[in-house]
Length: 440
Ligand SMILES: O=P(O)(O)OC[C@@]1(O)O[C@H](CO)[C@@H](O)[C@@H]1O
Ligand SMILES: [Mn+2]
Image 1 (cartoon, rainbow, N blue to C red):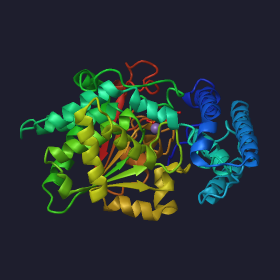
Image 2 (image 1 turned 90 degrees about the horizontal axis):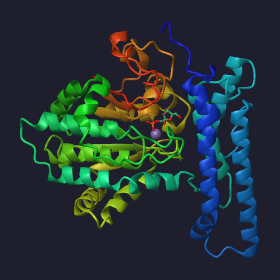
Image 3 (image 1 turned 60 degrees about the horizontal axis):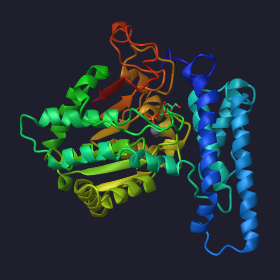
Image 4 (image 1 turned 45 degrees about the horizontal axis):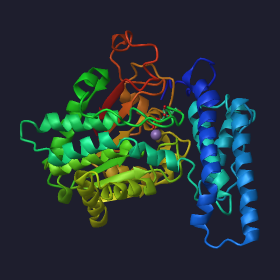
């Protein structure tokens, strides 16, 4: 394929990529480090019963060395130092080090934070954080974003209760079905608006009702394929086969709750009844971009709803969702591909099994900004580049992206008039969004 643009890179000091690498990621590291300092002793007690005194001394030493590795990583990022081979024994290390080698070859020099693509540098940082823990003896499963992800739901409970009551009490009629479906799609879309990576860990709980502003926000959806998405959902609803819906998740917290409510609505409205479809939820396998959901974040969310005594609606939703998981209607899919530095056009080569699994689905819904960046390769496309062109062959089946815009890449516009009058920071603020669909 000709005229493929270069990857977005932190070259220009004013670009979002450079600000992220030099300011936001170091801030995320400090918050993660602070949480580790505050919680590592509790972690030791809960994860290592009856540690001997000498083991406790070892663990203290190990905690100090983890803090040192965080500080070193932060210093390297802020001063454009070279990246390095990963040295833990996880199964993805070979792939990561191959990627390092390909950058060394491309640059004919050792890659540094500012000389590689933004996507690689940012993914690499999160993988290096994981390396500090996975190499350790006492803190292997420590998640430096655990507390922030839990708070992202706990501090959004009024919006969560409002949405949960809405979904459980909603009675649809044939002529309201399309509007209600589009509303729930938009709730899931705007659930992505705030994430802890974008805010560098600052609180971004949902305080207003997620339903109140939908109509007002609709004009901020700059590309809106929700009608086409509705038609695909309708066709699946009348299909004689058992449709498979794949949700490639993004953030834990309130966003995950909006995703769960979208699927619950599809079940309870009769569009995709729970006993006549299967839903696969794709999660990350290591702590990622602060907010991203892992399997235990998904399971914690459901358990948290079940014990939520302030809302019988949330309790009943949580119990129902737990049942969907145990009956197999819902399954949580873990695959390390999503936390590799590769964009999705590499999936058919790097993870052919995953690509073929996605190809069996009837609809893929990709949530969030990082998934969008990986769909289009985080390349410096013209905004008027067709969405399909930017996918560069990644097209397993009907695919849709629900993305609030938080990075300086956006494709599929007809012409400049669609963005010319927007504020300068329209691609960083998450105030704007896209719903883009590519039918199979
Ligand atoms: O994928 P998400 O959670 O919607 O957003 C991820 C994000 O916050 O992190 C990166 C910037 O650090 C950008 O891709 C985006 O701003
Ligand atoms: Mn995320």
